[in-house]
Length: 469
Image (tube, rainbow, N blue to C red; front, side):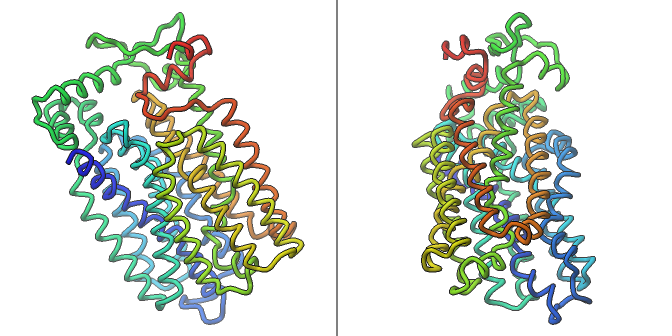
């Protein structure tokens, strides 16, 4: 029953990623419509506006993510998710109520504010799930995002524009209501001084009495995590205080200055976040239909997009298993190598047409699987695992801020770059990034599977400290 409670709560929280996936890939279904004379809006979108349709959400994410850390700590994990789901609902209300180009772009801007859910959800899940299933549950971010893509592509290809929008709005309302089912993170409750409530939450998710030894041990572990001792002589060795004495509270910058391991963890997370963007699948997700029309003209673009979304969902389930079976580092290395091979083969097929069109589809779907189980999943889990509570929100937000800045750049320049060097050339660039990612992870990315945050921090310390782990 304990596992069931954690799985159900993880599913409810990850539902927010599904509704985000719907909105994020919605431009793929309406891009051609809004740029044609048959547009449902008040006028035809310009080329610049069509580029903004796919990339504007990344800009609002870049602007608002720095403030989400304050919301995350002020409201807690649960109510931050509720606020974001209400913002998603607001974006659909705008699309349904107004039929102007400006309103659609504003709705995309509003929806981008909720991009921080990609940070909040793995972090939230990691704080109420036990270590044995933490990675698998946190990987639900991409699995549910893929389900959202599938819903978006299906609705875009099968129903009218307005019916699609009303359906998406209804799905989002359900998500808002479901979030009231879950409980706040026990770490967050304890951080705010609500010890009794934290114990109740742990007891609920472990299906044991509040007075049980398991709950007491978990409470003691959370107290130690909230009171780390940084040794000034050897700041990289972050031991957790066995006593419950209060320690001097440091600012985020002071903490980073004293903690070499936290700085190294932040650097690795920055690189992994860059890999999530520049390995390139994001452009396939957002521009799926026009991209499939060019790469696989013999197949229906809607059918290709739906299969692509189904593959993403299946890959999400695969990732949930492999992230615990192989670990974070190995999975990142092998998936990046496979993605690099797929991108090279795909680029040559698009450029030289050396095989039938279905070959391009096969390589795109293999590329999707490789990306989803690696760069599409691991960085979000890693961000939620490697930082101590003092800087977890700040460090995760900085990584996500960088990620969405890169998202905007990639999505905005994609169409001009395709016109300049061709679609095949784009995939050669992605292949290079995949290969460099694999090399970096082999050299600099410590394994975190099944480890508590204090042990993970020691792995980021100097080599002599890692040998103690």
